[in-house]
Structure formats: C-alpha cells, structure tokens
Amino acid sequence: MAGAARHPDADRRHARAAAARQARRRRRLDRDRARRRLPLPRTGRSSIRAKRSAPAQLPPPPNVKLSTRLFASIALLVAAAVVASIVAADALLRRHLEAEVARELEREARLVAALAPRDSAQWPEFAALAGTRLGRRVTLIDAEGHVRGDTEFDRASLAHLENHRGRPEVRQVLDSGASVGVNQRLSASTNEPQLYVAVRDGPPGLAVVRVSTTLVTVDVLVHSVQRAIALAGLLLLLAAALVAWLLARVLARPLLRIASAARDIAAGRATEFPDVHVPELAYQVDALRAMHHELERRFDELRREREESQTLLESLSDGVLAADQRGVVVSTNSAARRLLGYGPTEPLPPLAELFHDRPHRTLMKEVLARAVVEHRELELGGSTVVISARPLEGGGTLLVLSDVTHLRRLETIRRDFVANVSHELKTPLTAIAGYAETLASEAAEDSEAGRFAEIIVDHAHRMQRLVDDLLDLSRIESGGWQPEPEPVAVEPAARDAWSPFVERAAQRGVHFETAVTDSAGTIAVDPEALRQIFTNLFDNALRHTSRGGRVRVLAAQADGDVVVRVSDTGTGIPAEHLPRIFERFYRVDPGRSRQEGGTGLGLAIVKHLVEAHGGRVAAESELGRGTAILLTFPVVTQP
Image (cartoon, rainbow, N blue to C red; front, top):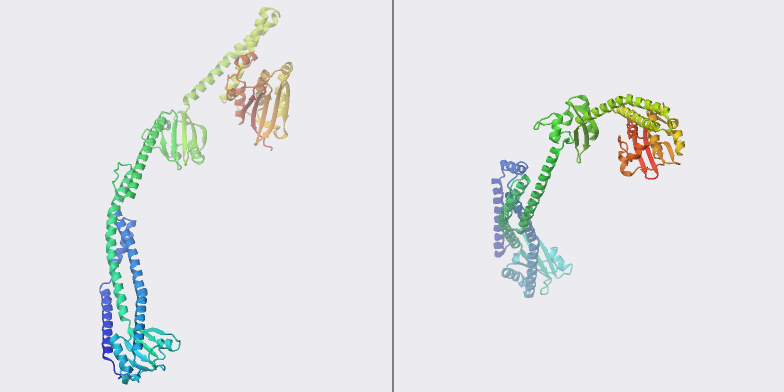
C-alpha cells in the first residue's frame, strides 16, 4: 500500500494516536527513572531486619504495636479492595465499554447501510463522508470481498486494497450467515487495537458495511478509572492510619493501665484500677478488680493459716523437718534445730549432709530413696532421738524427730527397780513359803492356824510367780536374754507344755486338742521360750474356760509365715479391751484375775517373747464364745 493516498482526517487521527503513544512511553520512562533514582539502601534493609528481630529482646510499647497492627489490618483490607477494584476495572469495565462501543458501531453501521446510495459509483465518496461525520472508519464491501469504499482511502487507492473476504468479521456475516460480525485486533497500519463491526445490510451490490474505531479511548478511560481507584485507596490508607492511631489512643492506653494493674497484683503491690469508658474494657477492669479482691481474701486466709501452722509447729515438742525432692530443707521448727545442734538462724544443709557419721548418713540416704522410715533410734549429742519419715504430697519428705531421752532413762530406772526389787523379794518369799508350808503340815487340818498357814502359802506362791514373771520380763526388755532359735515341732511342744495342766484341766472338765498341717509342723523358735509362751496361754485359757470347754492349738502356713492359733471356749473379752490385753498388769476383770491367781504379766511376756523371734501377736475374741491368740513365726527354711 506504499504510495496510496490517505484521507486528511485519518492522518489527524493517526497523529493523535501517535502522540498518545509517545505520552505513554514518556510516563513509563519517567517511572523507570524514578525507580532507578530511589533504590532501597542496604542500611535500610538491615535496619528493617533489626527492627523485626528487636521484639525478642525489647518489645515496643503496646500502644505502638496495637496501632501498627490495626493499620496493617486496615491497610491489607484497603489494598485488597483496591487491587480487586483495579482488576475488575481492567476486566469488567473494559469488557463493558468494549460491548458498548460494539453496540454503537453496530447502530452506526446499520445507519450507514440504510443511507448508502444505490449507485455504486457514489460509494467511495459516501464512505469518506460517512466516516468523517461519524468519526469512524467506514468500509463498504461487496459479496466478493472487494472494498468498494473506505474512509481512509480515495477512489484511486481502492483498486490496490487486498480482498477483505478473509477478515474475521466479514467472514462471520458472509460465510456464517450472522447478521453482525465483531472482531478486535491490532491495526496493520496504526498498530493500535481496533474494534471492527460488520453488518450484512445495504443496497443491492453492497454485501457488508463495516465500521471500526480505535480502542485507545477505552484504554484511557479504564486507566483513568484505575488511577481514581488507586487515589481513593491512598486516601483510605491515610484514613486507616488516622483510625488506627485513634483506636490505639482509645484502646491501648487503657489496656496498658490494665496490664500495669495486673503486674502490680502479681507482684503483690497496691494498685489503682483505671477508669475506662469502653464497655468491653470496663468489663475487664471489673473482672480484674473482683479477682484482686478475691486474691487478697485468699492471701489473707493463706497468711493466717500459715501463721497458725507456724505457731503450731513451733509449739510442738517434737522436731519437724520438711525437705523437697532433692533433699533440700525447706521448713523446720526450733525443736528440730535444737535436736540437730543448729542455731535459730543457721541454715541447714541438705538431708544427705545433715549428719557426719556413716550410720546416720546411711539412714538419710534411705529416707531420700524410700521417703518412709518407721521409728529409728539415733544418738545425737547425748540425746536419744526417734526419727520417722513420711512422703509429702507433690514430692519431698517430712521428718519427725522425737526426743525420748527422758523416757528411755525412766524405762531404764523402771527395769532396774523391778529387777532389784524382784531379786530382793525372791529370797524372803521363798523363806515365807517354806515356813508357812511347815506350819501347815504340822497344824491340825481343822485348826484355825492351819487355815492361816494355807492362806500364807497360797499368797507366797502367787508372789513368787509374780516375782518370777517380773524377772523374766525385765531380763527380756533389758536384752539380758536372747533367743536361740532352732527347728521345733509345734504339736509335740504344745502337748509337752500342756502336761502340767492335765490334772487341773481334768478337774475342770476342759478338753485339749491340736491340729497342725504338714507345712506348718516346724517353726524356728527357742524351745524354752515356746514352752513359756504355751504355758502362759494355757494358764489364761484354763482360768477363763468353764466346765466342758475346750482349749485348741492350730497351726497352718499363711503368706509365707506359720500362724499358731491358741483358742479357748471361755467367757471372751469385750472388744474395747482387746487393744490393751498385752500390756503389763492390765486385767479385763481385776477381781477375778486376782482370785484365780493371775499376775497380769502373762500376755505381756508372750508378746515380748514372740517379737524377740521376729514374729507378731494378735488377739480375737467374742463374748460368750471364747478367745483366740494368734502367734506368727517365720517358716523354717529346709536345708
């Protein structure tokens, strides 16, 4: 198409389009130069990184953080809305504007088709005139695709134009039979986006009327709308910054004062609660105030309870010492410090270092390992101390130290007194009994002197038994007697101990029975001690069993031990007396016991003898049905 004539209006339009393109290029270059002139400095980036990592070391003030977060949140929302609006303007608005332009071009094309002259010789001038009036490019095409008139080409140039039947919009109406054909493409001559609308209409010989226009105006309009949206977004960001600052001022300061009040409460300091007018924050302040009052009330209760506990702890005569899981002493009283030899303000070492000698250190290691120790006696600075340990809830150990020095001294004095008195009484009682028996044998049976002599003999014998029991008990308690265990058959030992009571049992009509299982036939016990145990139990049973009754000895193995059960069918013992029947000189019925000749020491001796063998003793009884004494001994290990 070189050398082809051009319409003057077309030249003006091309000039305007070229100027618009030059302006757009200049704006892009200006923006690029601005970016190159204002690069982000390295120091700025490093400072930003420093600010981001700073909160881990020194947090910014809460009001700044709150305003920043509020602004960031609002800015994100505004930015998202702006981006969405710009994208929508570029897509929806552009599509809408292009559709409007297409509809307008269709109306103009049909108007041109209606006004086109029937004489084809006038079509070139008519196309030029119509294009000038409409401000569009108008093209008239016949059925063969030849251009018969064009706004931008004169009559002479039409012959040089290529056939337009292959144009998409022309093909739509000629080949597809559509009434309207629309296509958008870059113009080969102007290199600008053009919208082409072709209609199948016109006078005979004219097949297609096509009207086209540039879309630069659409781009300009869309870009102007996008700039307006961006400007509105910038204004919204400024408004968001203002709103964030106002919200931070309204919310952050009360929150900061609330946080300060909470820190004062946590530190136990007096605090003043802020007056806030935001309902939600006012509710939080009220809740914090209520919590503060409740904490004060509970702290007062805890303080009072602690003072009461400390007063009670200090008033105890026993030493109390509490340690944590590591053995560090966390609480103690003055009695414990006195027993351990520490001053009132002197710090106590951990339990493992509380004592210096090996046995005591071993005991403390056992306390730390087990946290349970049953009554261990220690000698501390000339005092006898009983130590007991119990575990504490949540970990730790509670030690109780009882000073039993005075008690042990009294027990020693009592044992010595009993032993001395018994030895001193034994010889006179023997002489009294001997002389009384001589007088009784020489006196007439029915004489009053004989009766008096018999009474003296009976009381002398009872006193001798009492002295013998006291000596035995004193010897056992003082450690002067130690058992020599050996395998002993239970049933023969029981029958041998019963033999002195056979005549007495026959007189009272009391029967004797034994029942021993094979597994419990032999126990490890001192033979003489077992004989004395059976003797004391049989003597008690005969005194409290009426005619026709029964004394039975049963032995069976249970839980790895041998349980020997000595029972009778006597009067029985009330339940309230059972816990004390193994105490020395304790009698359920004192009058009857003395009348029967009992000393009140038989069961106490039984208890000490059984425990000396590592065993246990217990009692069961039911009024009117009898009493059973249970003796538990270790099983003899077969070689």
